Image (cartoon, rainbow, N blue to C red; front, side, top):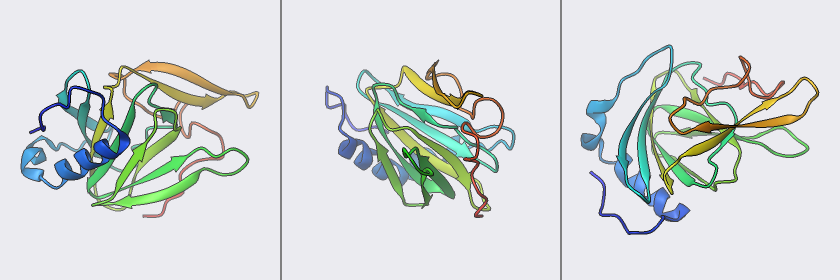
Length: 176
């Protein structure tokens, strides 16, 4: 399924190419797609010392909350359906973009963003991280207005902290 390792960590451009290629080959992963309306489902497709690749299935109300990827850069390809990405922006609302099947997002380890399901049909995304994820940062806004980062394991499911949106007033608008 995966090309031979390059024996080094991959760049954002290489991760972009990797997820684009894998998303275009559904025979490699389609049999692993499983949608659950109560939570995202995800399965690790590959992990070595330099890259980890995941398949993630999305339905209504599935949302990662704002997070970073600690020391790992990454990319995600939308193989089916639609998702929306928001990136934090100082002094204004989050930068928002809708990504449909065939679209790809790549990001630096330091980027703070959230991904949520969009549209009327379930979605499937292919993600790659290099180096492989071990920790991530999940964000919440305290009652004082301070932004707080929580370090979590890659094995924990990302979700908005404290119930709804990770940041008050930043709930995703329905555009399905």
